[in-house]
Length: 252
Image 1 (spheres, rainbow, N blue to C red):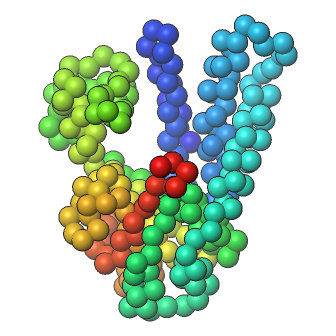
Image 2 (image 1 turned 135 degrees about the vertical axis):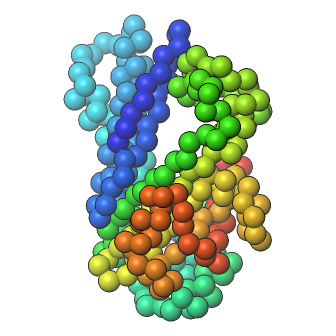
């Protein structure tokens, strides 16, 4: 995991990015990632708390963050999902059968976590790959260390930049990022792939106007190795399976 820390006056911001992993435990990887994300925030809070009455060090803080991460993970995986995904991971299907099986299927972010945990319970190992393209229109500009587009459309950023807020907003909206999560049991593999544009509902096609995931598998006529090579070049095969990614009801 790569951790970034930005400080601008009294403001501190922590950002974490999951590193590429291959054929590992999904549960262990996610819990470790979450704990490593929580720990620096927890430590920063304790360092500023003048009323803190107990001693602590980095190990103490990380262990506390690990407990929080484990509890959060267990809460997330309790969510039920459509039985079609259960069949997808446990049975053998042709490409046409998988397309038919997943027609109309959808997931919330919590259900997606629960599904990935279920894949591990079915004997699948987890791999995570990410590709990010360089901004095309601002090569001569100085980018800030961090940019975030807030719900009201304004941009929050940390660090010096020569960009206007409008330029930063354009970069965020047009970010070219590809993330692929592959589950492989040594016989079959399933890939759940997302692009930033796809998550924002900014892709073409019937499902392109709403947040969605792309689905691929070994039944689609491409090898796992070739798929990974494409991802590392910022490309992926066309697939008719787009799975809408919904907001959890509790967040409405």
